[in-house]
Image 1 (cartoon, helix red, strand yellow):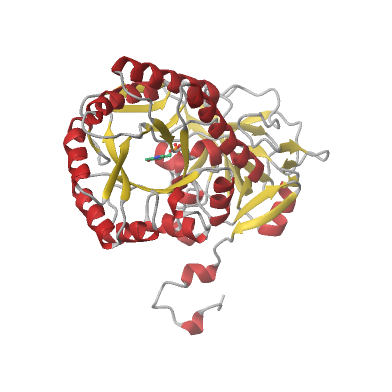
Image 2 (cartoon, protein in one colour):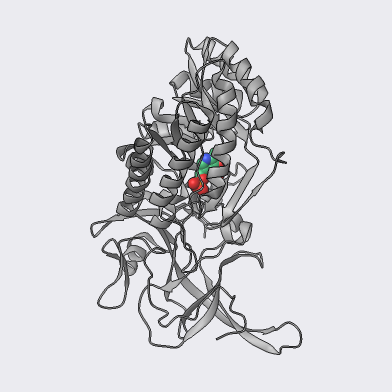
Amino acid sequence: MSPLAPEWLAHPADANDVPAGVWPDGTLRTESGQLGIAGVSAEEILERFGSPVYVIDEEHARVRARMISAAFTSELARIGTTARIYYAAKAFLSTEIARWVTAEGLGVDVCSGGELAVALAANVPPARIGMHGNNKSLAEIERAVSVGVGTIVIDSEIEITRVAEAAVRHGRIQSVRLRVNSGVHAHTHEFLATAHEDQKFGVPLERAAALVETIRSHASLNFLGLHCHIGSQIFGTDGFAESARRLLGVQAQLLESGEVPELNLGGGFGIAYTRADDPSDIRDIARHIADIVSSECQRLGIPVPVVALEPGRFIIGGAGVTLYTVGTIKNVEVTLDAGGGTAIRKYVSVDGGMSDNARPALYGADYSVRLANRVSAAEPALVRVAGKHCESGDILVYADYLPADVSPGDILAMPATGAYCWSLSSNYNYLGRPPVVAVKDGAARLIVRGETEADLLSRDVGIDPANLGAS
Ligand SMILES: Cc1ncc(COP(=O)(O)O)c(C=O)c1O
């Protein structure tokens, strides 16, 4: 066991395994030891589409969409209401993904003109689109209203008139929600509850009544309810429960002067990135939320609202695997704390990095990794998977075990990269974004092409056309 291994990382009996829960449902080792996702081998994917490449298991994403939808639909039916589920497009949006989630009955939540454009390009019915954003431009509001998006989440006082006036211009009555800060911040196991939040999103809960009155004073607006989002990668339900309690308290007050048909509790349902992650079953989360909503409404003597949710990562996160090719390997001698001597850390560098997955560099997020082109009986060795960018913080996997004979040319697979990887990707160091490939029933197909060198040069207006393609 390496002294550099973090406490949460267990030494694996087999560094070739692909534990269920972390990998897409359709992941298997083939007879030759290759990793296969939905019946397509890693080598085949790389041969056809190049390296690195994002792979999305379509069936996994669809099953997760159905799973969360069924869990909330049945639990909310039990308490006499319905669920309205929006896929949070910020996690990862392409026209294909938009088609999958709408085919599974979900709406789509967008938070910029660009995301709206993709949803519209995928023929998502505008009535099923919800629009967010703490600083929507006037043009974004205008477009959202003009195409007829179902709901707009008002994020600040100034937006009330902006949306109301746009609705008048387009002769529409625009349904809106009001985003409030519930004071609850949740992450993984814990949640923190404060009265006043220091953050850019939404309005303080105690301002809600006054702002809803203003919303209701506009004939061009239809107030649907309050909205909150308490964080991401949440494993339990206590944060959602506390937030629901706080919002329903205000809901009771708002019902004294008008209707409040909905309550939107946002997204944030967590997934397993490594074997150490153990998110609660979504059915238990749905049951607990439904119980709290029901008991609070009963206590307050108010009708049970429709409950809206906006999961992103829960649906697409675990469906994704990124494949990379190993370039260089270094055994680095590391000085241990408190005179503990030294230990070797194996740096395995691959052909991507923080430009295709910024989460480890941004949030210190942990991931796991496996050899994808073969299995090996070599002893497990602690590795750190690094990218190829000019930043020492360009790490993809801080710590996991790979067979010690991992070598240049091997293919590595990183699971749980479906959410907030492609959508947060960049062209840092002029790397082109990798392609996105959907796999299903033994077939792989391109859903977003990768960026070429020509793409990378295309916006630089100073380039002499004579130099293009010179190298
Ligand atoms: C308002 C809102 N809704 C939904 C989401 C989706 O969160 P997740 O992908 O963690 O479910 C986010 C993420 O930041 C958000 O800000």
